[in-house]
Length: 104
Image (cartoon, rainbow, N blue to C red; front, top):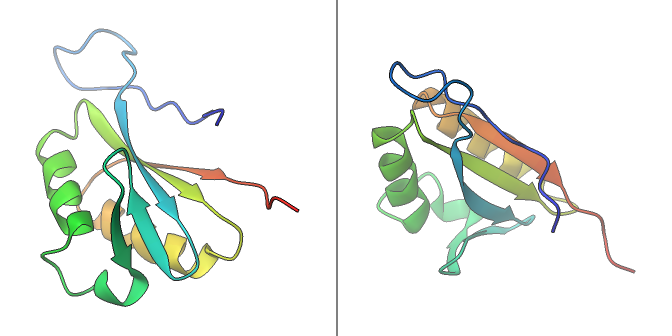
């Protein structure tokens, strides 16, 4: 996987333009998979809280000057990607998104 989303820190005290560290989430039509541990959260559980996504979002929000969330959007995942982006941005966390190609 070639990742082209690089988000730079603007935090006081951070090295000028230092790249933030991504927390990667693979997003499918009906679920998301948090990497590298492989925790799976169904699309319907995203709003319930207490799941692996909510915990990750809280962790990244607590360290948002040096971390961001990278969504790896699989074919057919646009609805869930948009929901996740809204939730992530509502916490003041930077988000990147990469589009993955369908494999024939």
